[in-house]
Image 1 (cartoon, rainbow, N blue to C red):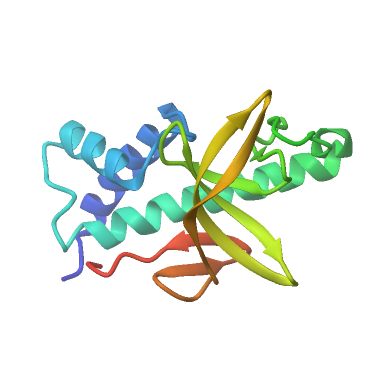
Image 2 (tube, helix red, strand yellow):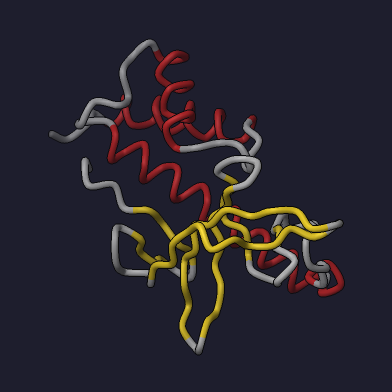
Length: 163
């Protein structure tokens, strides 16, 4: 079912406002949808709205990525973020140099890593040894394109089977 243009505009403006006000390291699509639903007094988790909200969120993230890339090109010193530290672009790395995509809990992280020439998405528990956080054997590695993980424009997305 196609949404009316004025409804699309209201949803897009509200979702973008929520995204701009959110801490992107803590925000999920669900949280954005829930907050926008409250502001608009409509259930954006319904199947007729959910794909549109996802589209707005992904467009916003792509725009943010483009801004980060442009800023990195203009000021290459900002790209040099040490391991385990955030760069001004907001990226965080493990002590092994793997890009942290998401922190699921204090001990669990989703990372992107290279292993034997392949890019892997790793969901793993970590433990502290001194000042370092090291991965445990408790976890799983997946190749993008399998198990609902897809790569879009150099970024990884988790594909939701519910649409």
